[in-house]
Length: 215
Image (cartoon, rainbow, N blue to C red; front, side, top):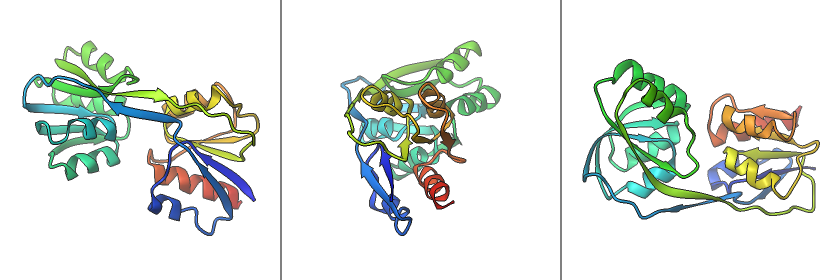
């Protein structure tokens, strides 16, 4: 039986996707996130940028947001559940920043992010003189754990998860299944056996794993 490690604990519906696949699954959280103490510039935010569900969870119930600019459908879904109006969605931060540059040059933004946020959004907005305030609303810390066994496949959902796992383990001949390009480029530092999801969602990563090992 092929053994699979996921570096993020899955929901029951996500685990259902593994049913009848003949794969054995081990779960652990390679990273831990925690909301920080932060101050809002005001109780009403006109344009908010969210790149993860963590940032939504950190601010929901505390402020009103007029327009949400989200990276990822899951982020947008959670924002919507919290009563926020979704203005734009893109799969990647760079794509979202490009949309803002093309259509919202007159606006200013509040970017709610974590301590390990990527640089694309701030860099592109600065370069195009679009005003924004950045507020760190959660911290990500690595949660490394050594594993005595080697796995046939490992699921990675962020570059931080790759860093966490590889700080105590080697990838060797393991196939790394990555949620997106940025996670895959981190995994490339440790292995050439990489499969990237066709859509940046946890479900799509699982589909790739099941498909790959059914061959």
